[in-house]
Image (cartoon, rainbow, N blue to C red; front, side, top):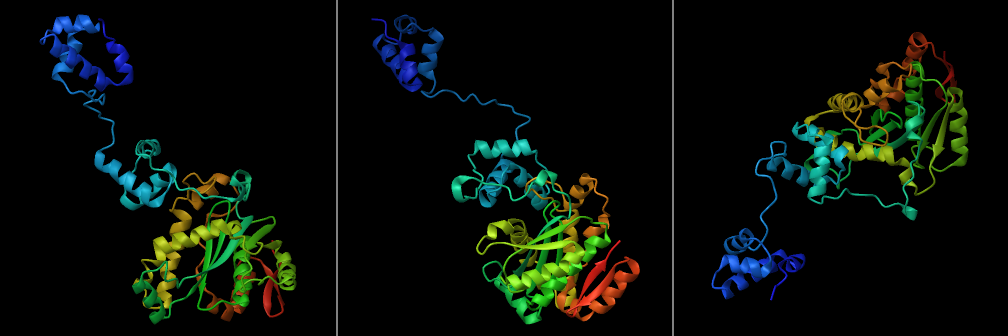
Length: 372
C-alpha cells in the first residue's frame, strides 16, 4: 500500500519522519524500497533516518548586517523598562550609552522580541491632540505649572534630605512653549500668587523683547499660586495681561491631561536632574547655576519626541519654523522669585532702557503699557 508521506507532512514534519523510520524498519533498512512505498526520494529517506526529527534551522550562517546579540539584548531590556516606541527609544539609547542605532533596526528588534510600547488609555477609546501641532507658531501657546521638588516618591532619600538641610528652593515654575517645547524656568522657596503673576509677566516681557508678536495664550491649572479657581481674580489678571496681548486659560478641575506637556517636563526633571544634581549644590546660588545649565541643555541639545517634534531640539524646531525670532530667546535666565520681587524696580528700568518697553505700575505690580 502506498502511504501518503506528503499528507503526513501537512500534519507534522516530525510525524512524517517518524513514519519514514517505521517503514524503513519494516523493510529491513532498504532505502530504495522505503522510498518507493512512500513516494519520496532516497535522499529524503536518509535525511529522516540520520538527521533529527525537527527541521534544520533556515537561519543564515553568516549575517554581516545583523545587529550583535549584546546590542539586541540591550535594546530589549531598555524597551521593556521604559516602554518607549522605536523613535523615542533610539534617541534614549544614544543619550544614555552613546550608541547610534537606526530607528528601523530598533523597530525590528522590538517587533522580533515582542516588546510592546506602553500606551495611555483615554476616555472613549480615542486619543485626540490638544493642539494643531503641525501649524502652531512658536511662542503662541504655553502651558504653565509649578512643581513641588520635595517628593519622597520621586527623589532618593539622600537627595531629599540634602535639599531640606541646605535650604535649597522647594518649588519650580515652568512655562513650556507647545510648538517648540522650549521651557522658561524659575524657582522659589514658597508658593505665592505674587510670584505667579510676576513670573508670567517676566516671561511675557522676555518674549516681547525678542520679537514675539501676536496673542499669547497660557494654560494654567487652578492652583492657589495662580488664580485659585477665582473668577474675579482671573478677570483681574487677564485685564492686566491684556496690555501685553496675553490671556490666561485655566483648565477645568481635575483635567490634568490638558497640562500633559508641562507635566511631562516635571517627570523628566525628576529622572534626569533632581535625582542627581541637587546633592552637588551646597547653596541656592550653586543650585541656580546647575538649573541654568539644565534649562540650556533642554532648550538647545536635548531632543524631544513629542507630537510634531520628530527628535528635534527646541532650538532646531525654532530654526525650522523660519520665524523672525532671535535664538537668544532660549537663553532665558533662571531666577529665584524672591529675588525677582525684591529687584523688580531695577528690572523695569533695564527693560525700558534696553528693550524699549514702557510700563505702568498697577496695584503694586508693574505691567507693560507699550512695546515696539
